Image 1 (cartoon, rainbow, N blue to C red):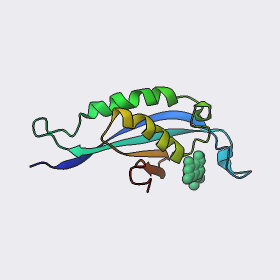
Image 2: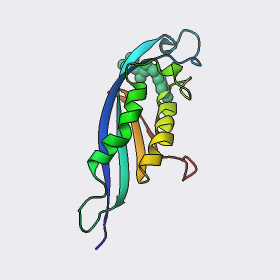
Image 3: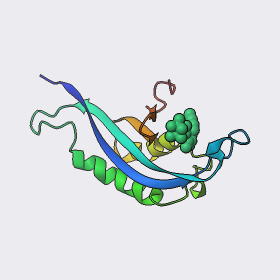
Image 4: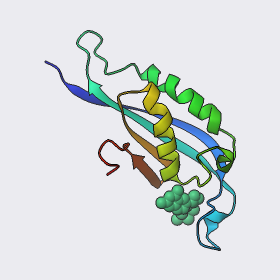
Amino acid sequence: MTFYAELSREFSFESAHFLPNVPAGHKCGRMHGHSYTVEVHVRGAVDDESGFVQDFGDLSTAFAPISAQLDHRLLNDIEGLENPTSEHLARWMWDRLSVALPLLHAIVVSETPRSRCTYRGESNGGQ
Ligand SMILES: Nc1nc2c(c(=O)[nH]1)N=C([C@H](O)[C@H](O)COP(=O)(O)OP(=O)(O)OP(=O)(O)O)CN2
């Protein structure tokens, strides 16, 4: 019998950023760095033969060019990330990962251990 499952894999990278649109005096308007963590989630049917929704390795392969673009960079310099909030970063990653990962279900971006943003694309109107 077909059943569905959700897989996720966690990645990390180090980047600098500042938030250009915060109110004057906000600490995040100053350049600073984060050890970002990103969870990439896919969801789909478990294949009868392999027992996989998808090979976990496919998530790493898909994330590698993202990491190469972001790691040890100033995010504000990257096209589309001029205002690199967690929300914009999650959507930026979605736009790129959804091509390689058609089963993409969620992207969770954490700037710090206590704060995270989850983005699930626009197929549900972005809700
Ligand atoms: N909705 C969002 N709010 C904030 C974002 C964001 O991307 N989306 N980003 C920031 C800053 O980048 C900031 O570096 C992180 O701030 P904060 O969570 O306050 O981090 P701290 O670890 O410094 O928090 P403490 O409360 O001081 O421990 C801010 N907001």
